[in-house]
Image (cartoon, rainbow, N blue to C red; front, side, top):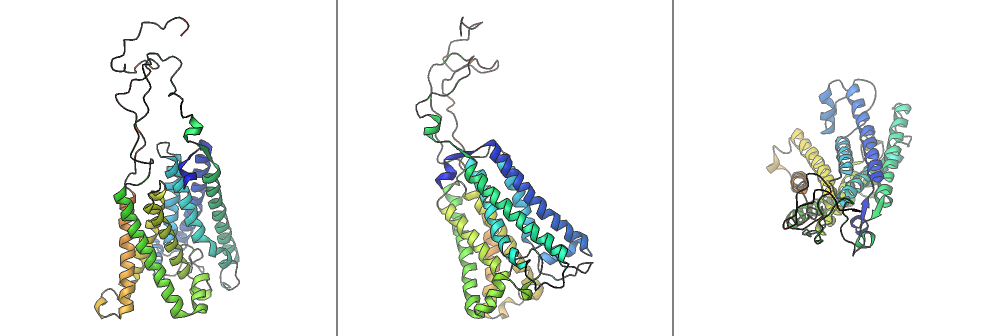
Length: 370
């Protein structure tokens, strides 16, 4: 994506992007706190995220799923990344766009699900607040996309002036020669070749496995039943902000395949995209494994039919691939270009500035008219 590489997010864009991320995190946190308040025990919320069915203390429904705390954490990480001046523009832009893509894919079906009339037994006010939250999150995701696209200023040679000498302070003297900075091994922030290939292979394999299972379920269940698990109906409802099972699998597969393609190209925004996809895959696979443990399928794995063994094996692989990719993508990328330590520069602009090698000592006072 040349538009990501060739521009720098302005300070205002970084601030606005961080604010949108914090609002996304606040909305998600509010619903997690709401679930904690209606739970009979705080641990019930975690058990529900892992597939258990504890009942809330009040006559109501759960609101969150295992993906909600990850979206909150991802929003906080993206906010910090956007505000850090040491982070390259492409990495900051990638963090904002990755969060926006995950938010859109994991929230879009809830717009029509929470507006349908088949959830008759729930408090209409609660459903209205949930739908308003989803619409607000989608609006904030659009803000993140706009900030990433429109909040850039050019940063190429044409913008800086390809033949201009490095700027020096007005009070500096002793300029002997100008030496360009030492070029780094690639675009700053891009992953190194080894971690990039590892992330691409693991994410691509996990995304392909999830896609293959969805094709299998579509052929096995037929269009009508599969559509219920894709677009949602009362038979698949578990929580207000929880996705239909087939939509969730396809959304995670799409995120994984997109991040794999970025890692294969060693794009500078591949690391934040891989981190987001890997975290969601880890939670998805861990949840499926927890269900296999509770149902006893993992304990009698050898006695299971071949298809059931393949399901459990796929869940284990997705969780392992996500966790490994998390560790791999968390490694620092290519550093920014550093100045040559032997470069002869202007000196005298700061009282404690070291004199360059072979430069004459500074005069006791500046020449007239300096």
